[in-house]
Length: 195
Image 1 (cartoon, rainbow, N blue to C red):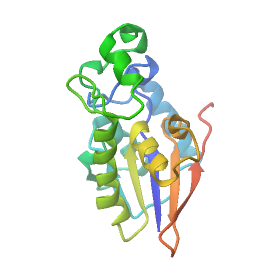
Image 2: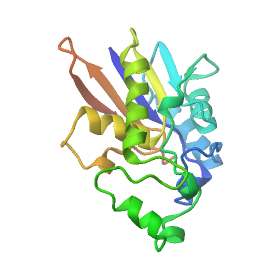
Image 3: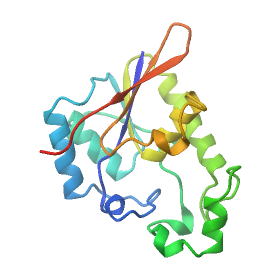
Image 4: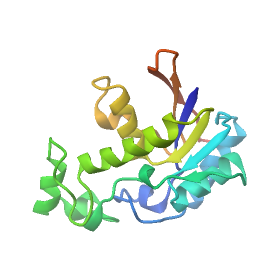
């Protein structure tokens, strides 16, 4: 069985380097164009069952890649909830003691004000992954978020890479292959978005 984890396309918040987790933004025109290029180059794997996080940017990405097909929205696969840090940049917050406490927290227990801690987000995302994606009986694709993918890959392959090194480019991701022993291997879903 294969599980394809695909990051949604670019939004204006991505382009502006803003923390965007719970804010329900659409894709930008650049994001749409890049996904159309990737699709035209046969980047995306086939899947019998489709999931999204339910957020607009994931739903729009699904439609551009797979067409107008049914998909199951899984709230647990949403991006990190940044609370008061939503839609702000590092530059805007770099002197805020609450932000400094959050980004320097090595244990993952400091929550964004009004949002989640890294441990809380990890627990939620892995619950969604195990309950829906691992439980699927056929090849599936989940159109989700960078933080969601990073969390799943770093959980399955601990100590292989730095946490953020798992972050795929928008519109790309990973294919997880589960062997008969129940263990996963992975390969990247690669593509070039430059025309």
